[in-house]
Length: 270
Image (tube, rainbow, N blue to C red; front, side, top):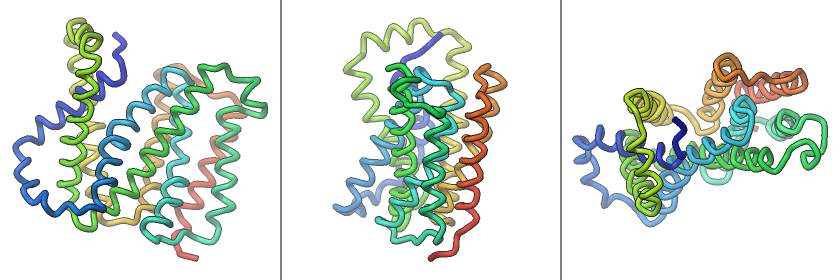
């Protein structure tokens, strides 16, 4: 059956928080949180952990999943710009021209070679907007997470994100309790298994490994390494969801991949 996005997000964070509950003692030094840590923590909890997943899922409901996934390739652009401002990381000299080309290819990928107001209906435009929002929250989360890792461990950051995300999503769940409760009653055994799998493998395990790796790389490098996700997902969406791309979108997707690959291997600062 089809579940509401926020219902799935709530369950994912609740399952993850339950798994991590025995380790909650690691947050005993929560007093180390400084005033300038509060906004970054709120961002990764409400934005990256809950908002990013919500808008990504909403985009799937309005747009070709392959397009939604390929638009995630814009994450390094957002992440690099934020890393330059917040972390003082310096990109390569070719960042700006390649970033501009990547944005152009992303436009063609989404709207092809026409005015978006004439080719896409209101639902598809809404889906594109949701996809870009998810890119912003996840790309920004990489940079903010890197900043917090300067004085918190990767495990502590995982705990922040899951326990904070769980509390935030439970508040939203409480507001729409009647709607979500009806979906709980309708879920079957296969639905439960799928939800648990998503919560543990691409959810908790992936996030744990991500922060572990982010400790040892720059935010810019990490954002480009994340591009493995949209590349693999695009092929899976094509094969298993039967949502192919046309030749213009394939060409622009290849161009986008080439741009971000060149940006990824050009790590020397200007």
